[in-house]
Length: 87
Image (cartoon, rainbow, N blue to C red; front, side, top):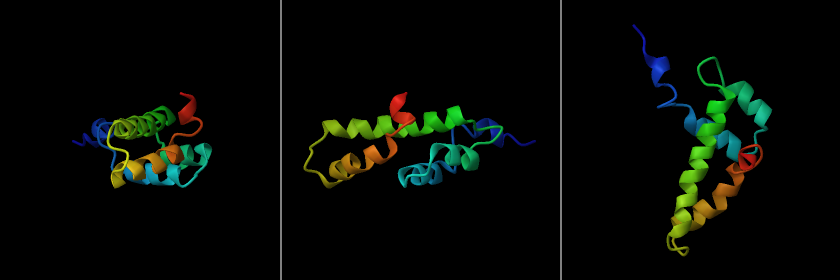
């Protein structure tokens, strides 16, 4: 018995690929085409990206002279773009 599909939304091994492609400027329609399927819809895709954006937002309260914080501040706009930025 295979239960992998029930776990897909909790743990998606392709999440890193999705975030990378989106941050490199992949158009939304293309990302939906290559990353969604019957178990992982475009809504799940948007939710994944939005959650990463929310997590990165939490770094804004830290010391802004820290290299990690500076890197996050530079990276976040590349993934917080339409349609994610419109949610």
